[in-house]
Image: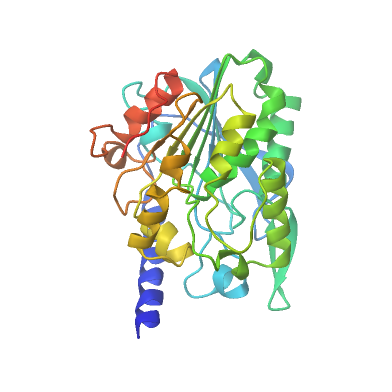
Length: 348
């Protein structure tokens, strides 16, 4: 009975997540103007043409956003009654405020040129293969390839001049936040010259149950392990706590300001994907091997904002961006501090 209730709660959480997504994709009042750019060779999960969206701003400042939206690894999770990821083209930027706002009081990237990476591959932007589920249903898990192709295309076609940029922000939410920890490697050679480099990871999870890796296909596991290896972090399939990835990235990118936002009781990352209760998730995240403790080093440029809340993602909406930790720091103020290089302190 308890297992049935757990699965029912998970299904309701996922359904609620996609309801929010679909409502947000309704015509928005965003002030930014977006241009769709087809990326040759890039594909959504269903094989359709992949596009990025470009919003012009100050050419000396560039922000990249990796959209979130779950993950899938089987016929049931990709095509079942309650799919855990979206595999079709996403024609618009669904966010209407928060990080994408052009209001300098609401976003540290308000005047930046912004490149938005829709998420339609179900692989945390890390996949590099085509899967066939149930013998006939193909899914292009090629999020890694899509990002790399897009960066190459934007530079080669000079639609964005990376060499001109002096400030860069890489922002990811949910699955996009996890992907951002690896695509910082993709961006590195293009922005060695930049004087301000920032990674903002909004709800990457990182704390999961020990059965996490058993659910994925061998091909997806290989893709994930390749990403972890790139970061110099060995993926241990026997447990689901991957928070150690953060200090590994911080050591390799000591000239980047890194800020991680994560609800300690995140219902999506705990119940839906982590197979943990919110209590178990909170114990992990505040524990000795969790995100909060691993980012306390005062000598690095990494910090975490970890409120005790079940909320999943904070910077996509003004309402959640205003949420505060017990010590009074709001999510967006934490983001502003990280971008300005005046942060470095943890908050809970």
